[in-house]
Amino acid sequence: MIKADNISKRFGRFDAVKDVHVHVKKGSIYGLLGSNGAGKTTLLKIISGIIRADHGVPTIEGESIFEVPDVKKRVLFIPDQPYFFHQTSLMQMASFYEAVYDQWNGERFHQLYEHFALNPNASLSRMSKGMQRQAAFILTLSAKPDVLILDEPFDGLDPVVRQQVKNLLIQDVSSRSMTVLVSSHNLREMEDFCDAVGVMHKGGLLYERDLEELKTDISKLQVAFKKIPDESFLAGMDVVHYEKRGRVLTCIVRGTEDEIDRYVRSYEPAIYDVLPLTLEEIFTYEMGSVGYEIRNLIV
Amino acid sequence: MFTIDTRSRVPIYEQLTEKLKELIIREVMKEDEKLPSVRSLAQDLTINPNTIQKAYRELEREGYIYSIPGKGSFVSPVKNEINRERLEMLKKELERIVGEILFLGVPKEEVIRIIDKMTEPERGSDDD
Image (cartoon, rainbow over the protein chains, first blue to last red):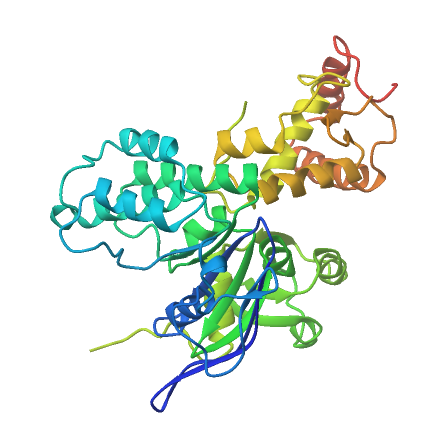
């Protein structure tokens, strides 16, 4: 569906995006995660055809998007700060959207703004950040895009609205296989929402993976022994991180559950637990392995 | 129908398969009963439809449900050897639990009584 290979973009001397490959399947919700300044927004803007990459051409269903209006009609992008024309109301924006987007559904628009209880005739610039974002969602979802690209979409929304927006997105994903590409820092939220994730760091994509695959790929062990085994115990596994507190050993290990299970049991542990990792933990450890880790700052 | 604990460490996909298995094993969902469609479940629970699809595929692979293209997924008729792997795992789990009970000084007879009580009024999936 969305295919972006070898994408690079420089701003002056700064490599904002370096040789990135992103593939998003149709009907999938893809989460783009990454550290601050990793290049997520730049990449999203390249994929939605707002800026042109120095290298590589992203395609949507095999077609290039940059300056191709027919493709752009089916792809909508909500930036981290929603944009509206100066001093317009929701109603006025709607008539603009209706003129531009073929798949615009006026009935849906009506339902949505009534549901979110926004005044369609009030000036958008006077609304709060959260309400502006709601307005952006109302407009975008009424335009019924095939591909929806969201940059930090849930920022500024209260929990109730957040859940409602998610629910609306999921309805569109399940009923008409809309594809969603979303960037976020809120890993907790992405965890429930996405089915695939890509992690960016310093302009490059560290990896992209199916979320469930990612989770079964790496696990957290808690082991305690009556007699502590020698170094060979840790050396026999692909250990990402370990910590020893008293007699209890906590390790983050890569590999399939069966393999790890068999290996650890062969050492006859007294206590042995496998805990699934949260996305946040995976993120932290993976970033740690490329030198971007949580270090306690003492000032 | 049921809720998903989004704060739990257990992946949603696993929670889903576990919950559905429980409903099937306890016969809350009867043989040949239709499962909710992926679409409606996704909407009700606000969960990614792909995750639900995956959970259904897994349940099908394990033999708990079967699907008819264009019609949906249904609960499979009860089979004795539903899944050897799963059974092995459960046996190990039981060993662990019984081990702990015995360690805490509960006599063996007590454990047997619990099992007797469980198999009495209900017909279990096992014959004995």
